[in-house]
Image 1 (cartoon, rainbow, N blue to C red):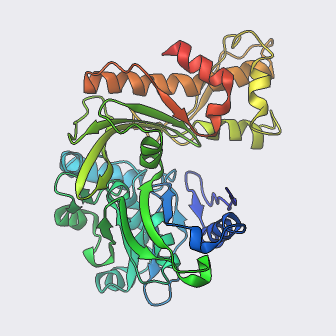
Image 2: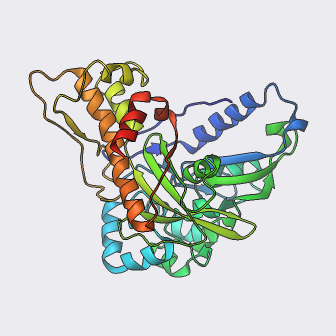
Length: 393
């Protein structure tokens, strides 16, 4: 195991960006770190999983990005989404399983194409390429030989018909995105390219690609319909395997591709809480309440309850089931007796309560009583949070 951090940029309120070049350099470094004590001949395959909606546009000829990567948390296209939603919202919902929200890649990509008068023409001619981070890393690892994604990542773009399993020409036209710049959509489990020997010691097949939440669903062995996992990361993402049936949610959850194997698509219902671990990071970095994220549990245990404090964790808007990109956070119930421990405990409760809403919606949509919740992600190591989650469910 190896990992390397990279920088998050916040150029304006509601904007979140990454440097695609830095992502490539850090992840190549992590790959080399992980392989440092391994004979390349022993490595069977490379797998790639990624934050799904982060959007990159680069030049086919040079591999140079034309704009910073716009991150899934970015809200700059909220007005674009509202405008498209008025005329075409149901259309997008039926074909993609998604709601018109700045979370997804399609409006981010359309926004980038509007930033330069020549971008549209170059995209139309195939000179500019689009990808989520999996596609960007595959392109770089193969030396530009492969421009591909998998069905789970494609299903998060607002441009992919999850029922027919292909890019949708009508949706592309509404967004103003040329088909020529989109990657080939492959199975989640298949050899889709090979790494250059200079990166991995020998040419190794890239044989598995999936969005992070779908990869966690599979990794948690939620491979039968009705099984559920919740990932406690920057956000909280709860996902239920619904088998080969794409359930339409009546509770504003997303219908999404879980994975595609040997041409057969497995679907899932998903609810996303945009701020979970990010709330703890905010208490650490902006508020200085703790020095490390792991200290939140001890601080929360320093008091018997939340002391009447409630936190609405909408630091990046509200995801499912509200879908309010304009919402902001709040801390309520503060008195002269409020201590740091009360705020810490209320923060953990906010994360757990947000997930309760998602799981209740899933049970209602699927009409399946969920007997077991599998958990992963950094905050799942927090025993108090897990106990709160179990109690509240």
